[in-house]
Length: 310
Image (tube, rainbow, N blue to C red; front, side, top):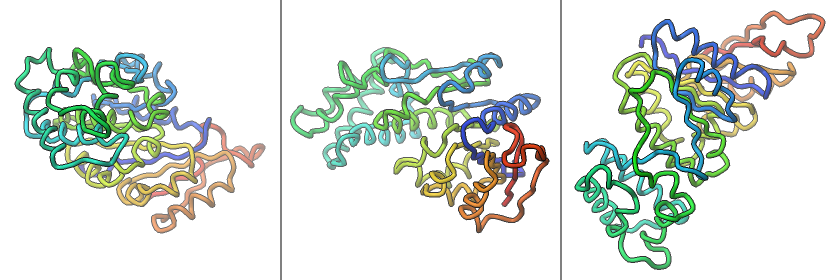
């Protein structure tokens, strides 16, 4: 990929962000790309299904069909599982001792010695040690068997198969209301996507991206992640509603540096001033687009007011 394709789109509800993202997907279909669309509130569900894509609704109330323990036994997957286990184990407590790490390593080793159909979190309990207050075993209880979040990963099989289609959508609205479930789920989805990338043109779309990845787990790795994706012929589209939230985000500086294009939709022209303040160092030009003189106080809901390039 000679040009940087990473893009950020910012604008309030009803400004046309989802329409633009869907339009970009349709236009990209001429190049037969792979599409991974992280949706919110089912905004793109009909669109994804119309493309004969696979749309998954991920929530903790019912089985998600996700099971990271079914990954193949490779060094990359073992490294991921170690990171994933650490994240699960520190959900309610930052405490993680050297002995805990050894037990997690034993659990990963034991997992790959089991038959694939037996690879479940509940079957790795013996590796986690004796239960008790604030022990590794007690901190993992919420993720398996009858735990509050067991339906998320403690499943009989892993239905996440990126060979079934070129287009995939994930409804993330429920997980955004459950921060404990969000980070480990995204970690797995991003890992599964990353190991599936083979140079085929691909696009990853993150609706409400700041809510998804502006956290201690993902923020530190965004810059390197974007560089790696570009080498794999993949670009990311970030979208969010709030300029103010984006301006306070710890990932905003990285996105300004790494995105080739930022599009801003607004309903009130004066909100442009907030955007200019936020991205002052990256600002080169502001292009006013056509506006209906009869409604000069606001943009047409599908008209782009300005485009900032850096």
